[in-house]
Length: 184
Image (tube, rainbow, N blue to C red; front, side, top):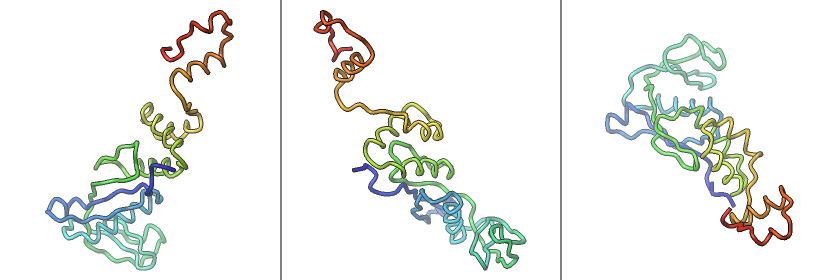
């Protein structure tokens, strides 16, 4: 059984609303593709109470892009409308990201990469591998590449020392009783 009962997700708030005393945000599944996460954030922007920029919304594919444009960036349709919007977000909460830490300033690409790594965890052993790697490396690509290289040992330090010595060395019989495996 895994320690991640829920899919990694983030609570994103619109900063202009938050700074004006109004909490306006939503939980977003961080395992979505980066473009879809940004579209969810853009949907928050165009529903903000405290707008400070404009956005274009395609009338054909509903693609949202901040600021004014002549045509849709997704489908190239000229059938777009301009709407008031906000332009800054903040991540106010997250769940399902342990052992990684998410800050309010974490970028979406990094969050999506963390979610991708964690969504491939099938059990507690996989999570233990990721936890170990996250304590050693900060680069998410390195962590992702090295997960299969980690081998976990189930047992005590002494059991591990004994197995390591048995696997790597030939200890003469007269010395075996003098090895204090738990204190190695």
